[in-house]
Image (cartoon, rainbow, N blue to C red; front, top):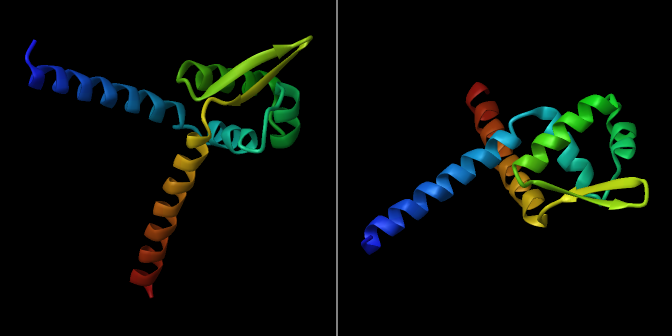
Length: 112
């Protein structure tokens, strides 16, 4: 395989992974879970209490976040603690929110 073919294959794989991560972020409840986890490790019960969402719903969303590599879990005794797989996930969310705030500002100025 020539160098350019390897580069194209690598870029294609990165794009596939990027799309997969974005699918994990594509739900408001999952974004809320990530916001809670940026403050530190939490159990499902703690996340439910923080968000006021039923446990079954939180568990489903955590499974999706885990499958996308955004969240990890560790067991301590009878408890399972969830955390962000990387602090860069919170950084990426912050950047996206900055972009959206800029866009909202542009829309507001266009209306005025």
